[in-house]
Amino acid sequence: MELVSNLPVYRTVPEKYIFPPDKRPANDTVNHSINLPVIDLKGGCIDSDGRDEIIRDIMKAGKEFGFFQVINHGISTKTIDNMLEVCENFFKMPAQEKEPYYSNDMSKAFFLNSSTQYDKSQTRYWRDYLRITSYPIEEFIDQWPEKPEEFREVLSKYTLRVREFASKILKLIAEGLGLDKDYFSGDLSKGNIKMEVNYYPPCPDPSLTMGLLPHCDRQLITVLAQGTAATGLQAKYKQKWINVKPIPGAFVVNFGHQLEIVTNGILKSVEHRALTNSTVARTSIATMTMPTMDCLIAPAKELVNEKNPPMYKEFIFRDFIKAYDAALANREGVLEFFKLY
Ligand code: OGA
Ligand code: NI
Image 1 (spheres, rainbow, N blue to C red):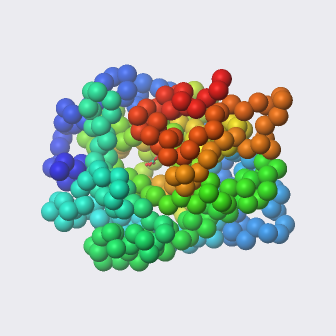
Image 2: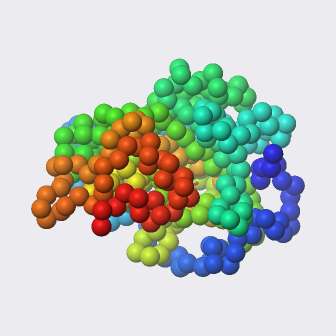
């Protein structure tokens, strides 16, 4: 077991975490003058006035950035902070407490791992992560750890809240696309909910390491909570990177490949990456809304016509996952299998 959260305090970065120069963070330009749009959900009760405006703003942000932040969504900052804290406390436990969970067996509903190996160079990310299957809760709760003490309770509550939030956003998006508001409510979003909890300890030299290399998410939609400790997440915007600045209590929303395909490219799955920093540990929680494994995915018929022919083939979600893993999450590599043009 090799975890960055249990490394001794180094003054320099150990060799195996140093990326080749062309993969290092400084290789691409960062545009510091652009911020992601922030959508105010006005408490989350959006059946009344202002709904059309919110839908318009989400669609505008979605089309331009594929990423946006959401505030006043009705989920208390405390619920989010409790979840971040309990996860952070897990990583801070001594190595021997974590060891039983160390695995990369995807069939487990809870496992801990580190530094996904990237391509043949085997360079390691400066990141540990938990992979959790969190919904349906009753089906998986027995596999979640009992330590930290409140882990199961906090995760259950967080799962239900974020699930509700994601479904609300998907309804607004469906409406914004001119589809039935329940277009995404069936098998497209009824797979198990998975979470990826990322933990990036302070790094002696962030310019040599990566938290996560550029990738797009495989799922339909991602809801990310990031603490306010540090900036680390960056999204691609017009060939440059922009920082996704932490806003207390906000969720970052981004579209996965499935939403891009179902909308026939109207909403794009955008590349993002995570950098490390030298001062504080940063924790982020990505909650993934997924199709069921047997779900047939294809561009929505309503969005396809003579002028906009389908850009992607039909496929079963299970096959997409295989291709995604084979392409190491590289955007073009993944889409290569499913693109018609
Ligand atoms: C992810 C991800 C970004 C972050 O887990 O897919 O993109 O800020 N995380 O940790
Ligand atoms: Ni991601």
